[in-house]
Image (cartoon, rainbow, N blue to C red; front, side, top):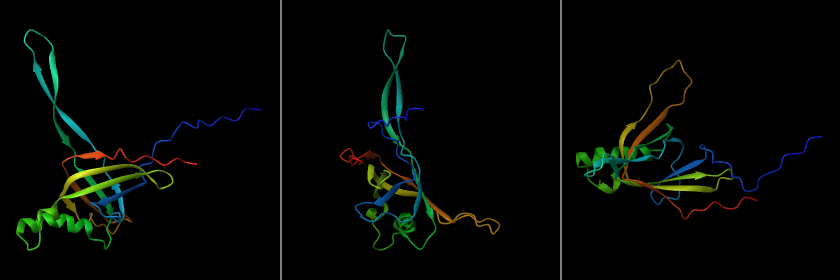
Length: 169
């Protein structure tokens, strides 16, 4: 008879990518129906320089760049993505009651554990919509869901290090 394998209590499985929530600013209600968020990615410029008398090219740290983030969700009656995407257009036209605060928002992306509790939280700073797709190509020959998406430019993100995962029992 074979011995049953033991459980390593110190091992934690990686989080699943399908459990997350997206919030605008300080709202306590998540953005409805977001089905996909692109990766949070940053990179730094590399500055190459040479020191006198040394044949090796040194490399220094330059400015950080943050890649745009895209959000996707099924087309519904909810208008918060469209309203945000239209804020830049309204500001450009000088529409009354439109301000820069309507254009730039803080986003919060929360990755959830298997029990649906927050495991990681990221804050995206001074985000604004650079591209908006209200509807996909329409094709009567398919059975696909209509998806809207926005491309978000921003000025950086940071992880909330105060958030710790609750102990699992």
